[in-house]
Image 1 (tube, one colour):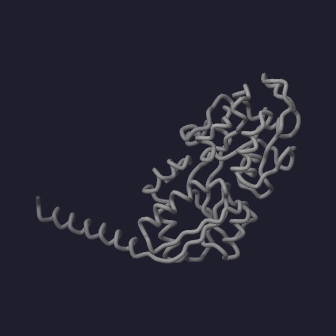
Image 2 (tube, helix red, strand yellow):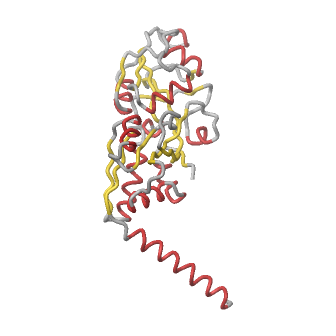
Length: 269
């Protein structure tokens, strides 16, 4: 091996060692707050980062996107979690897309209907279609289950289906898990939930939308129409603490892609 190549390799190895040492030396607390739909994603990323950096403690408060955005704005958390893009009115903040998430349209596993158009979904949630028989299913009155105002999942769903402030809900629930449970226990029901939360649930099924399954591949290529971003929210013009910055840099790098994918979301790095 030529001397020049040996020197180059030596300095490359030094850089790797310095990076490992730097990450291992990080310490402190990191507070995250927001979207309940991001629970699996932020959970696996936090666990791995804390395993690699035992002097860092990361907390997650599942309050919903709107509350998480407000928390980072008023300084009560380091990183806000929103399952939607920031609105133009949410100033003084920076949104960084961590991953993409399909919003699955879910029904009870025993319902015969398995494919709906976006227009069908809009008509169901606004009360224009009220019985499953009108969509080729059983003679059952449809029960719509949705999320509370301020939920990123609700905001994403209503934006795509153009049903903002027009949904007629039998139940308005405050978490993704509650929606899944409600739909799973009611054959008449329809709801919406994050793709990452739906996988592995036996009491429900995700219907096709315009003939397209909700999956990582169809979310990434854009053929599945009901999707939204998972967004990290930070304060504009303010430096994160060393621990928070190290965590932020880690989860937005390609190194985290496999973990994001394991949690059911679609990485973008």
